[in-house]
Image (cartoon, rainbow, N blue to C red):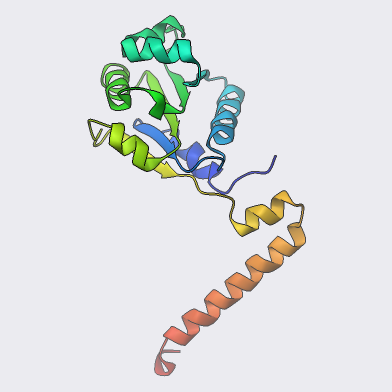
Length: 179
């Protein structure tokens, strides 16, 4: 499994208090990234719970009341990470996220995924302003694609070419008298 360029940014965002929300189209790797975050956190000996809302029983319980998440997790740790895949399946995702954030911020770090910004925005009845950070997950970049295909040398050459062209463009922008 290759490392996505966005992974380092996501790991850094785990240190912040706000709700980390990964959104993107289907099949761009949100669930894979969520699993990688879980693996990273477990290596750091963190308390981690990962759920998918494709689980109909869990979904029904959380739609009844956000506090029902505590039927599924132990709340003994000083701080824990709650990772939820497919948050848009909730009837009112903003209510769930706001409830957990407002009551347990600092004790529970929320990291969630959703498959469509439009669909999530439509279901969010509260903007969660100041409470969430949205990271857009996109399909592989061309460099990531090459790395996935073990074309490492070609990927390095493309990056070198890109860097060279950027330097050339910068030189063209500087007037001759300033060089």
